[in-house]
Image (cartoon, rainbow, N blue to C red):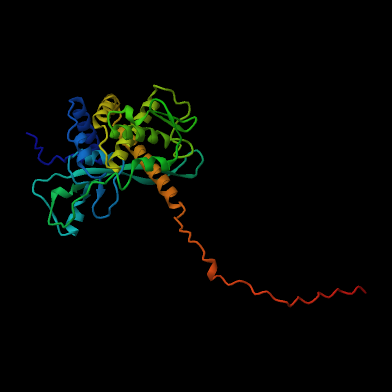
Amino acid sequence: MENNTNTPHKKITARDKYNTIVGDFIHKLENNDTEPWTKSWSMSSSLPKNFETENAYSGMNILTLMGQGFKDSRWLTFNQIKKLGGSVKKGSKSTPIFFMKPVDQTKLNKTTGEEENNRYFLMQAYNVFNMEQTENIKYEPEVKPSDKNNPISDYIETIGIDEFMGAPAYSAEHDVVFMPQAGEFESENEYYSTYFHELTHATGHRSRLDRFEKHTVFGDESYAFEELIAELGSAFLSMEHGIAPNSKKQADYLKSWITALKEKPQVLYSAASHATKGVNCLNDIVAAKRAIQMPDIEFKPIDITTVKQPIPSNNRPSKTPVPKVS
C-alpha cells in the first residue's frame, strides 16, 4: 500500500485566492444573496483604508473588504496589529487583498542577438483584519461624513463638465453630461449616484484618462466593460460622499456579468481598478481647482482725512541746459 502521508500540498497562489473570492462573489449573485456586500455600503462610514498608514485601498480590494460586512472601514495586517500592542480576536478569519507587483525580466533575442527588457505584473496577496476583529488597540470610532461639510452639488459643479437636460448619458464627442431634473428620481441619493455614473464615464475622455477604445460601438463588449467601470465608480463615489448608492441596482447590474466573470475572473479586477483611477481623477480635478481659487480679500475704505496732502511750492525747477553743438 502506497504511503501518501508525505505527498506535498499544492501551494496556494495569490491567483488562487483571487479566483476563490470571485467564485464566491459569483455564487452570491447567482443565488440573489448580495448580503452583506450591498448592506455594507450603508453601514460603513467610508471606503476601506489601512488604519496605521491611512492609505485607502483601491480597485478590487474595495469590493473584497466591503463584502465582509464590517461597520468599520479600517484594516490592519497581523504584524501591524502586533506593532500596536493588539491581538486578533479568537476565531477571526483574515481577508486577502491583492496587488500587482511589477517584475522586470531580461531575455536574449535570438534573432538580433541583443538583450531585451520586458516587464510583466505578478499578482500577489497578503491578509488583513478589520478593526472590529482586534483587541487592545486604542482607537476612536468612525464618524459618517456629513453632506453639509462636503456638499455634493458643489463637488459636481467644481469638476466643471457641461450639463444638458436629457436621459442620463455622457457624450464623449462633445464631453458633456445629460441628466434629468433631480425631482424625476425616487430619491436624492439615486440622482447623485446616477450623476456619479456619468462623471465616471467622463474620466475616460482623451483630455483626462484617455480610456475609451477607438470605434467603440453601443452594445459591444468594450461598451459593456465601460458600463461596469462607471457603475463601480458610482458606488465608490457614493461611499466617499456619505450617501447610500443604489446597491440593489449595482448588484443586479453585476449579475449580467456572471458569464464573463466565470470565463475571465480578471475582468472584475480590471474594471474595479479603472473605476478607482476614475474616482481619483475626479478628486484630483476638484482639489486642483479649489487650490487655485482666489482667497477672499476684504477691501477697507480709505480715510482721506489722514492722508497728507502735498504742500504747494513756489520753487520752480531749474532750466535744463541746452547742449552745445560743436
